[in-house]
Image 1 (cartoon, helix red, strand yellow):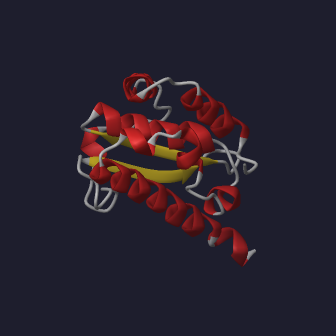
Image 2: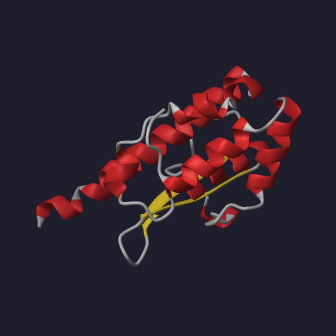
Length: 145
């Protein structure tokens, strides 16, 4: 087990308590409604589209007023929106450096991958990789100080 950020640990434990695939789906749908920073469809662009995702999914990463990381995202499928919400809640407010160093292994601990089709699992990985890449980009300006 890795030391995950506290909000992500809570999410991991919630998924670990699920008995089966259907319960994991229900939890993903619940998370879709908890997305903290929804990206409105009028702000969906080719630049913030998640490539390799079966659904139409869009993610923009920003810093809040205190320099904490935020994911602004949305998808046209509730399941995918739930996956975005897991990441958004799990890393909300963290320093970009911590987000940039995260490993996707928490997905294995959650046992959520077994509930996803291969294309959905690949899409989730692409969302995760886009988040990490944007966290690294957000680090660059501060290194010029």
